Every structure is written in structure tokens, then in C-alpha cells.
Image 1 (cartoon, helix red, strand yellow):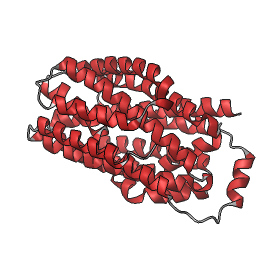
Image 2: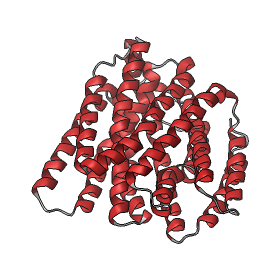
Image 3: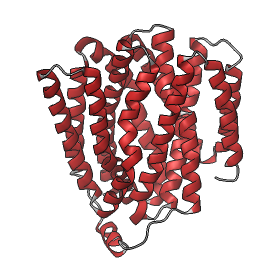
Image 4: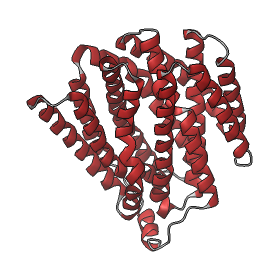
Length: 380
């Protein structure tokens, strides 16, 4: 049953992730095309994650009380309905499209506060502890496959069909995900365990607290570069068209995935503090040299794989040290700080870019990562 559940889960998450990546890339193309400002892009991302920062814990409580499977099914179909309503509403009215997109991101994010903890919480319920690291690695590689094709396809679809088609594709992905979720079967022993332990108090242990703070700081430093910096560099600095950017981004993701497959076999022995020092040194060197597309491409591949390694290590450790009946609540707190870190990092990065202070940003990040390595040198 575990193998069947694993296959269904990986399939539905791949489909859903593909729809979301299509939408996010297309919205980035749309905003940069209309305004050309990375700050506007950061604001749009903030609209999408603000409810998760403020109310994610509510989703965690819900996930630990109710059946996570049915939460995901309900939310998938609800998000599909929201997208359908949005498409019809905008088509029939003269509402400002940029404003409407921001509201859409906000509403989808409100539904998302129930989705993320339920998705994270269901993994330890369908995957045994001894297989978590292997599963998380496989899960990452599946999503990497989406990262390879999504920029290319999103650029092609956006240029040739516009944003409406992307919205419809995202809508369909939610419907497929909801249907597939209905085929996942939870073990009866898991349900019995939750009933017996439903009155156990919620608490954050020292290990969970340190892990959450470390991930928060890493989210400020690493993910904004992947989310904002590279798309700005290729589309605004190098004047890549949306399609050309999508093609090149897909090529970079393909190379990155090949690297990922090679290094993931050694993930257990990779020391995260050495990763911090390594990345800190690279950023420091970048601040003193004029870089070109080749250097940035190599930097992207390195940074993308560093982000994957840290994400897998952090998530697997969280799954191991968290009690099952409180995992959705703990996961909601963990991911709230992750999203908050990404949002703060996005605003910080966009402020440096808009003032043409890229070298200063590299130096700042280099020092920041060095401090992270020092502060968490005793954690594994």
C-alpha cells in the first residue's frame, strides 16, 4: 500500500506543482512586461504568501484535527472554482487586471493555509521513517522534472495564448490533484494513533526551534535569488524574450537535475556548514568580478542544488523529530517562518537590484551565510 500511496502522491504533487509553476512564471512575465520593476514582482509574491504567514497555524491545527486527505481534496476543488470564477469575472468586467491578479493570489493563498500543512503532514503518515530521506530525495527530483519543462512551456504558452490559458491549465491541475488524492489510503493504525493521542499538548522542542530558525535564515539568503534575481538578470539585463528565457531556464534546470541525481546519492554525508562556507566564498568572489552569462549559469546550478540539499535535510530532520499527531501544527509553524524568510529576502533583494547595488548584496549575503554557519555549527 505504501508504494501505491507514494506513486499517487508523487503524481498528484507533480501535476499540481506544474500548474502552479506555469502560473508563477507567467505572472512574473506579465508584471515585468507591464512595469519592469522587481519591487512590483516582490509585492505580488508577498500578496500570495501574506495569509500563509499570518494564518498558517490555523491550517496546522485543522490538519491535526481533521483527515488530511479530505482537506486536500476540498481545497483543490475550491481553488479550481476560484480560478474559474476569476476568469469569468475578469472577462465580463473592466477591472484593472494587475489589481485583480493580486487579489487572486491573496485568495488562493488563504485557501493554501489549509493545504500546505495537510500535504506535509500526510507524508509521515504514508511513508515509513526509515524511507523518509529516500522519499524526500525522490520527491525533489520529481519536482525538478517540472522545473525543467515549466519555464519553457510557460514562456511558450504565455507568448502564444496569454495569461488566460495559463489560468485554465492551473485550474485543471487542481481538479486532477483533487481526484488523485481520493485514491490515497491511510492506514487504520495511523488513525487510531491520532485518536489515542488527540489530547496531547502541542509544544515546540529545542531541536525543532533551532531547525525552524536556521531554515528561516537560509530562506532569506538563498531562495530569493532563485525566485527573483535570475529572471530579472536574464529578462532585463540581457533582454531575453519570455520564450528565450523559458528555453534557457529549462536548459539550466536540466543540467541542474543531472547534478542533483549525482550528488543525492551522497546527501547523508554532506555537511551543511561546509555548504554555508562554500556559498559564502562564492558570493564574496562574485562581488569583486564582472560576471557574464556563463558565470551566472554556473552559479544558478550551484545555488539550485544547495537549496535542494538543505531543503531535504531540514524537512527529513523535521519529520523525524516531530510527533506524528502534532506534525501538521509544527509543519505550519516551520513553513510560516520559511515563507516569511523568502518574503523578507525578496524585498531585500529587490531593493538592492532597483538601486543597482548587486555587488553590495553579494557581500551582505556572504557575511550573512558565514554568520549562519557560525550560529548553527553544533547542529546536524
